[in-house]
Image 1 (cartoon, rainbow, N blue to C red):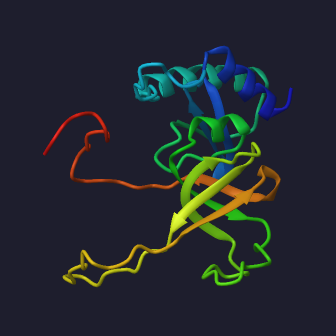
Image 2: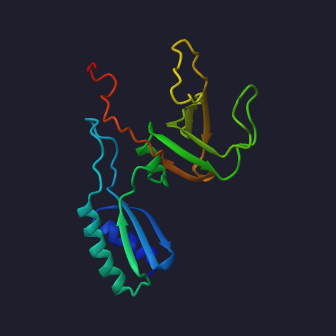
Image 3: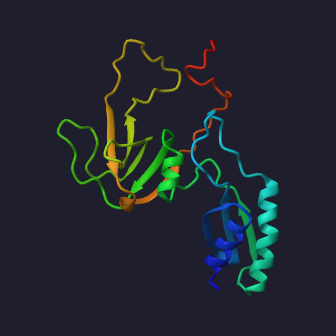
Length: 196
């Protein structure tokens, strides 16, 4: 049985979703797992996360399955997807709609709209992932002027225009959640009725 198939069957049999398999130099076999997603929850609770115990359970089972199949590897590493989780399937895009993502196209966008500040040779974009009215996908972003350290931003400055770029999954070289970390702690959800 092929390595990919063995890993997929073992991970799925334990109730997890296979995100990625990667072979590295030195015989390292890296397997990334996640908990399956069955659509948005009605109460808006965040998705459950993969724990260390989940990784240990999958590691033990994979070691046994790979030994039975006589798979070639020196070291096995099982991990969660992390904050920069790759997006591979339509289901991944549905799950993370509304999140900030980084996408890289296979080819530059080719044409820029008249009056647009977006370069026609651009391949990389960071923006909010949204479903289009036609059922496709787009990223929406606003080019912000970077403030210098210590510089105050005027409250009177005008907002930059919104940009949107539609794409199909076939046009993507890579798509990942943007690794944005807020070290100040969690902020209350807007509209939750809390005040600061």
